[in-house]
Image (cartoon, rainbow, N blue to C red; front, top):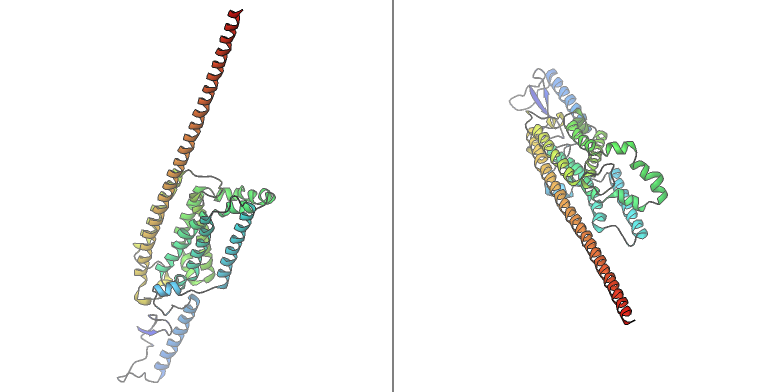
Length: 376
């Protein structure tokens, strides 16, 4: 078996049967003849066939991925950028209307900027150098997915967008449009914490261990739909954890901790399943050979390590944040209870003092009446 290098794709070779491979003379020149013609024809045919596949997948970027390429190698797709800009402008206008309608209670600065940062994370995942290499290196593709599922969604949820929409809407719009949607059966079903948890888990396992993942690497449309799915289930998963927006079922802080804690081993098991696979799971990456000197299996294990470590760290940080919120809530509840108790004790003391004054007044009246009768 001889191998013919495919033009334009490093480390990409096409197998040519030995029976049609052209013999090379001592001088290194290929002899002209029937066998040479057949060999050249076969090589050209194989090259065009693989070139077509390469074009369908997108060419491997020639530059080795480094900090500079990942940070500065942005590719601005009009649809993605325009969508993010529209959402950002709509968000800013929404907050402006809230501030004008409620000057005594403007939107908190933290919520104002967390949403913008969340959109920026989405832009980094889809337009930066990370996205440039997502169909070449599984490890960077994993970074992209973590940004879309575990980083951007909680930032967007912490901005409480549903609450802001409710505050900006007129009473008629709230009653006739927004609240009926929030109370609909569909939202009630998908907003249930158990459904959200199971949907997130099913999407993560289903996409990584089904033909969908490899197809997304070959088909740009499927790739975009996969990204949208990841962002959607991420928002669905983090909605009840953050707990700032109205939800069909509000979880207590202990329930949120259990919700996150149970997701952590799921993330670890998925990472281990990828890490300990005997070979490359996705034919797309396997056909690329070893771009930048990284073979598909090594890259796959790096991706699994990123999922395992970064995912568990994010879940741990989120669990600690919920625990801290629980402690603050308990402190607020305790302080409120203490204030109520102090108010009740003050009211009791006031009633007792009032009662003592009345009794003293009654005794004074009785004493005065007794003196008057003795004088007579």
